[in-house]
Amino acid sequence: MTLYYSIVFALLVFEMAVFLTLIIPLPFKIKRGLFTFISENPFVAQLQYWLKITFVFILILFVDSVNRVYRVQVELAAASKAAPGTVAGGDRMEVQARKFYSQRNMYLCGFTLFLSLILNRTYMMIIDTLRLEDEVKKLKGEIPSNDKTSSKLGQAGELGEIGKLKNKLAEKDREIEALKKQAEGLSREYNRLGDQVSPQDGTAKKDR
Image (cartoon, rainbow, N blue to C red; front, side, top):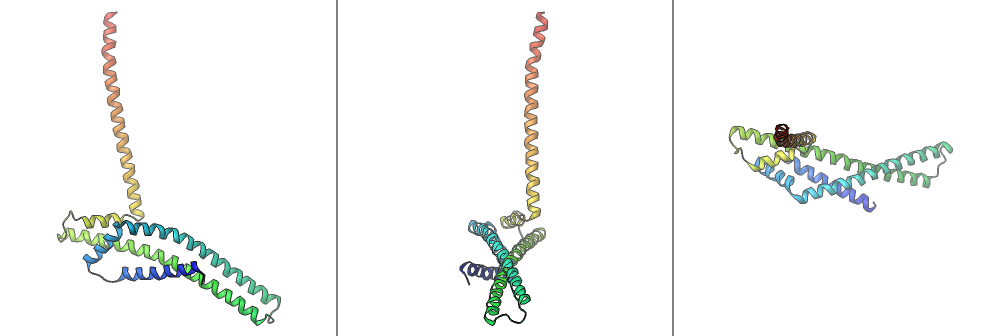
């Protein structure tokens, strides 16, 4: 196995370990503290950024491995049609070995990418679940309403698509408020200039 496929395999094992950690049943306080730490730790955020870049390269490897599997299949089919039943044993073993390695690389990259999607979705679902449990406990009075941990979880839960839309809507609201303030300032300045010009017009009329 080449170096980059060894790295992909190590990443797959790491994803499996993280997934097992996510689904392990833990007490509510421990789980909330763990996910709060993950959501606000700068090192974890930096690691997630570099993992996204790594997954782009894994996607390229996946496409390349699929292409190799297809080419080996075409080559094997062409050899069988050209001389059915007369393909040398060594050549056939060599083609079968290439086919096996190409399929192995394809499955390795494919499962790594698929598990990354599952991890992301599982993480977001757990964050949403913890946030809802916090809200329920707040309503029951078991958690103070000004609890900072629960607000951090709420911010982490807004990393999904709904959170992005909410952020865009809030940004538009801020822009509208800024435009309103600017319009009010222009209106006040217009009225002030109008008040300054009006006495001058009255004085000019009296002089006439």
